[in-house]
Length: 319
Image (tube, rainbow, N blue to C red; front, side, top):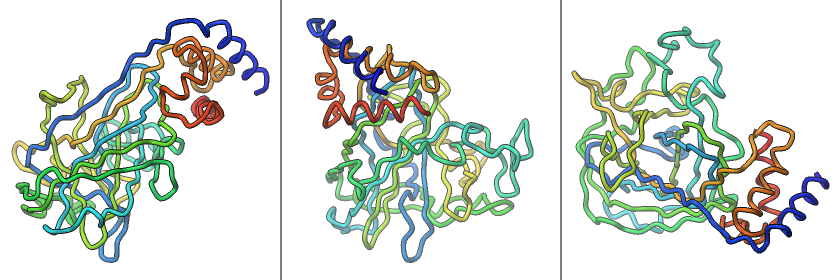
């Protein structure tokens, strides 16, 4: 470790006069379309923990510093102050981080609980990418977007294993649209890959219904190829997931949904490759070059210190 840090410091000194450059990263799934609201919140007195996830793609190593999520707070009149916590997890796409042996195998990878796991989130999250307001690893600010908004359908309690997975949804709902701005402390570091983003919002005396966005993505969103539909599960269904549209709401043809969120940060195209011996040294040297020094890199990426930057890249390289 000491040799890596010395090498990075020397490199930073050599490149200190280099003009800093960066390539911003921005992903936006678009605006709410009013079609569905899906529960995504921790366990409460009357409900299981319920997770709703939608996908995004990174083409280069990326430091994600900020996010927004948009949802419906119900019942109407629930104050913003009732939002007590936000937690974010990131998942690989199945079969990574998943027990394939408990499925039927190709082509469907079904289980006793769900018809397929193809293109679902993984069984478990990426540990190093989890951020939780109650633990001080993210900060969040909710704001009221619309005091009265209705969705045509919801998925709240009707999340059932086979053969009862198709419930047609839990029906329409009206509430307040809130957008929650999130800052990750520290930022989330991820190598290029296809991922699912899963937020949970704790609402005292109410529910957070994550709002759907158009699929395929339309302006002002950021379209990408291989855009997968949103999935949901509760703690009773885990580690499996169900497709909100295809499996739960159903129909001919069944609808498919994206969810309303955005991500922002910086791409780090010269970062090292996780799992390789030189990953951390290569990454820190690249950051010094890209930003004109490690202090400048930490500041630009949203890390509180060079030490925090080094620690995060240590964890990143061990993935």
